[in-house]
Figure 1 (tube, one colour):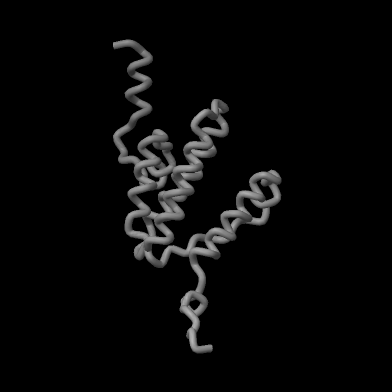
Figure 2 (figure 1 turned 135 degrees about the vertical axis):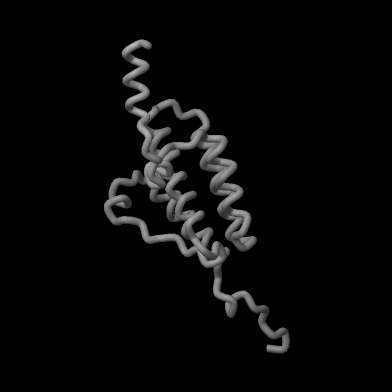
Length: 139
């Protein structure tokens, strides 16, 4: 047996892989894309349509990216979102999370503009019920 094969066998080990280590691994883009769309299925209709449209648009925008750092960052952030969405016990109660102020400071003007547009789009979808009720035509 070659020495390199022995070293490879030793590096594999016999202990089971930890769940956190396994979830930290990156998925291929198409597999990740499909899992994201599947994870949106139990969400309410408005949230699902917004999420699906956003995922599709982002994957289209990043189709031609060749920088490995950008690709790894893109895939790892979507994987983290998928893990967070999968952990939620009741998907209809998914509320998201606040953005870290340091992360916002690092964003470019274009990214901040996209974030602002996304915020406005989500506000339109999730208006309180009393705002959506039709007004009485007699008034």
